[in-house]
Image (cartoon, rainbow, N blue to C red; front, side, top):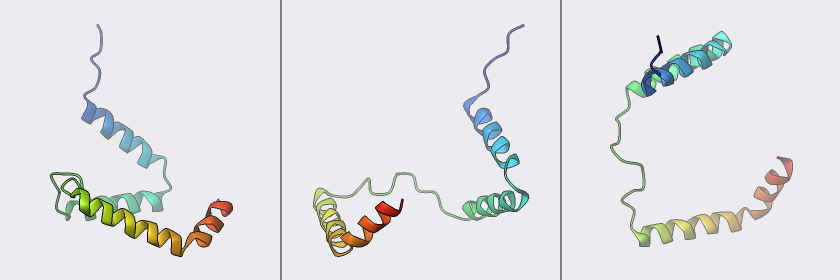
Length: 82
């Protein structure tokens, strides 16, 4: 008798349960609390930013570049610390 491979959802659930079992009880409670919170959130049908225009993307990139330039030394220090 050959066994059928588990469905992807079943494999996912098994991995999730196995992972949670390996956590300390206090951390497992945090996972449960987070999962319950997630159930209260609305689910987006698309990834964030899928409808961003090229102009908005350019503007966002420029804003991030400005933040980097203003905090360059801090970011470099953080990188050295890592």
